[in-house]
Length: 106
Ligand code: SF4
Ligand code: F3S
Image (tube, rainbow, N blue to C red; front, side, top):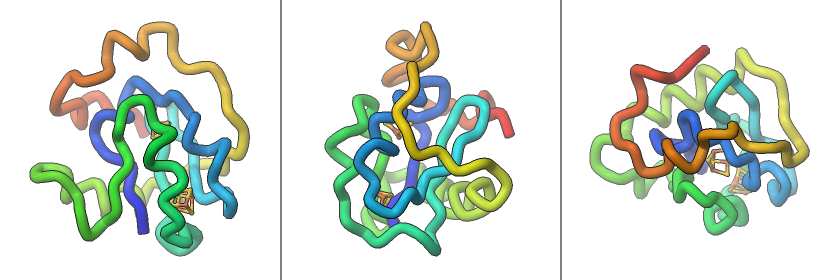
């Protein structure tokens, strides 16, 4: 499965959902999660993310390992999202800020 990681938090550009062929994304207040049971490992979403926040579970950057379980858990709790929507007004200011996990809203 592919995994949404830390830099999506408070960026949530949603370009990823527009290309996913199986609608694997689920939307929280300031983050998206991929359902590992739906993702078919096509990798189409990876280059679409302006925050470079999506990685395969087998190639997560150091420190991002917890996001595998976070995606699995939160994708079961949040509604499906299938269309692009406007990013938060301050998304660009948060792009690249490290260690945003304490800011994740559930
Ligand atoms: Fe969807 Fe493909 Fe990304 Fe999985 S890897 S979330 S199937 S676009
Ligand atoms: Fe998040 Fe990137 Fe998608 S910031 S919403 S994973 S395009």
